[in-house]
Length: 213
Length: 322
Image 1 (cartoon, chains in turn yellow, green):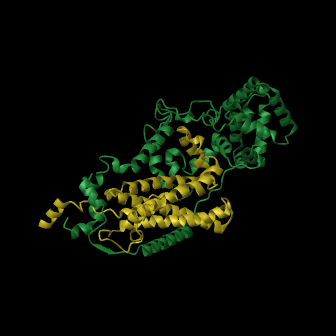
Image 2: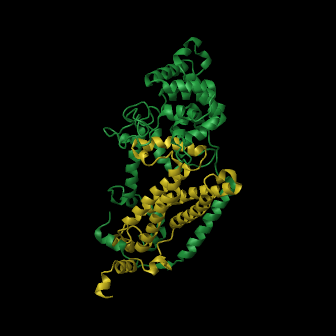
Image 3: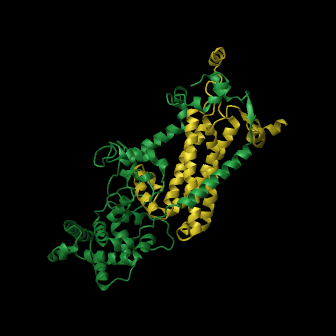
C-alpha cells in the first residue's frame, strides 16, 4: 500500500477492521476449551429471540396496529410477538447475570459490557413503547400512569407517552434501529475481543499452587 | 481489579486448549428452538387483549361518575386542571430537592380542561335548544361569571355525593348554564361522539391521545377498572398485565421503589409526594451504574469475591488444578 493510500480514511478503516476482526474471528470454527457451560447459550438465545421479535413485528407493522384486535391470524402473530419478547428478556437477564459473575469486562472488554448494558436499557424502552401501542385497556392505563414519571423530570415534554403516533414511530422505527446498531456492535466486540478467560487463568501463583497439590 | 499485566494477558487471543465450534450451526439451532418455544407458548396461552375503554362505555356504565368528573373539569378542580407542566401552569409539579425538573420545558402540551373537555366538544355538535342556549350564555359571559357558576355547581354536586337530585331546586339559579352544558356533554358521550371529538379537536388527522387520557384519568371509572386488574402503582402495577399474563417483569426494580417507604406515602414530603421524580432519578443512576459497572470499585470485584465463576468454569479449574 502506497503512502498516499494509507492516508485514505477508507484504507485506514479497512486496515483496522482486518487487524481487529479478521474473518476467522468473525466466523470461528474453534473456541477456547473453557467455553463449556450452559450459561454461554443465553447470548445466542437472546439474539434468536430478537430475530423472532423482528419477524413478528414486521408482520404486525405491515397490517397496522388494530389488525390483531379483529383477526385470529393477527392475534396469533401478536402472541408470537408477545412471547418472543418475554423469552428475549428472560434469556437476556440470565446472559447479563452470567456475564456479571464472569466479570466479563476483564481484559479490556469494558466496551463489550457497556454496549450490552445500553442495549439492555434500550430493550426496556423498546418493549415499553410496545406496551403503549397495544391500543387496548392495558396501553391506556400504562400511558396514564407512566406520564407522571416522565413528566416529573421534564422528559414528558418531548417523550409523550399519551401520544400514540409518537410512540408507534419510536417503537417500530427509532428504537429498533438503536437496539439493532447496539446489538451488532456488541456482537462484533464479542467476536473481536474473544470470550473472556476464566478468573485467575493467568494467575501464575495460583497455578503453581495448583500444580504442587 | 486485575493488575495491568493480567489485564494484558486476559485481552490477548486465547493461546490455550481449544475445541471445535460451529457458530452457524449453533445460531441455527438456537433460532429453531426459540421459534418453536414461541409458537408453542402462543398456541397454548395466546396473548392479552382487554378491550379499550371509551367515553361511551364510561358515560353509559357510570353516568354519575362521568357527570361529576365533567363538573370538576368545567370548574377547574380536576387533577388534570391542577397538574402543572407540561399541560398547564396551575402548579409547580413535583420536585427533587431544589430542582423543579417537571417544569423545565414549560407548558409544552397545553391542555385547558374547560375548553378542551367541555366547551369545544359541545360546540362541534348540533345540540338541543336547551344546551345550545346554555352554551351561548356561557360564551357571552365573562370569566369571573363562568368560574362562579362552575365552582358553585361543582361544590354543590360534591356535597350531594354526585347525586343531582339532592341539590336543592332553589339553588339552580346560582349555576347558570353549567348543569345544562354538563347534561349535554353526558348525552354526547353516551352517543359515542365525544370519543371522536376529543381526539380530533377539529382536525382530520390526529394521533395524540393526551386529552382523552387526562379526562378519563380524572374520573373513577378508569381507576376502578385498573384496580380490578391489579394495575395500580401500589400493587406493582407498572410490571403487571391484564388477565393472567406476564407483564413487563423487567420493570420490577422501578415498581419496587413505589412499594416501600418513604416513596409509598403520597402525602409525605419531601419523598412520598415527589416519589415519581425521585424514583426516575434513582433509576437513571442505577441504569448508569449498570452501564459503567466495570469502573465501580467494590461492585466490579464482587464476581471475584463470590465464587460463582467456579461453577461456570468448573471443568476448566478442575483440569488446570486451580
